[in-house]
Image (cartoon, rainbow, N blue to C red):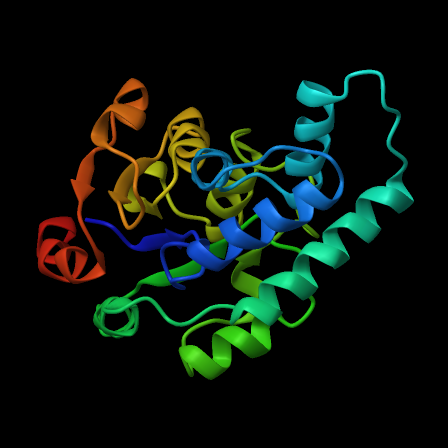
Length: 222
């Protein structure tokens, strides 16, 4: 029986990745870096700092990038993301959250690599009454993000639940890698363009096409 549900944000709760991918592509090009939609989906789950530093490391290995430059780069990308339309709730996400909240003795957590200061306001607007700040693991609480297991380990430890009672809801290979390294049951909701082969090395416990399929799958977790 699952009692702790640890949700990734982008691509799970919000249909935000198309605009994230386009924003990264545009801003990376401004800085002389090549970055595709597929790069975004494969690195989804990393902190933005890691995405930026990884791009420089791979394409401009001799370029020394300061923390101030990374922060400015991230701010520029965030402005482009908003300009492109930002994020909208993923179809079916609120129904899933409501169904879980109606189950006895359950906890709903957010585990994201985001460092958006307006995150709680955004979540409360889209999913009123679901999330509380005390059950959010963000880049502020855990700067060493996915694919490292620390974000999910921190959520699990904070929940006080046995691992066998916890379930991770992810959409990204790096998030799956993090959750499996943390020893947690993991459901993939594949809302992006990647195929099962991109997730297969980490053997998800369930592989579903969208959040509405997750709603139908929930009884199997009780």
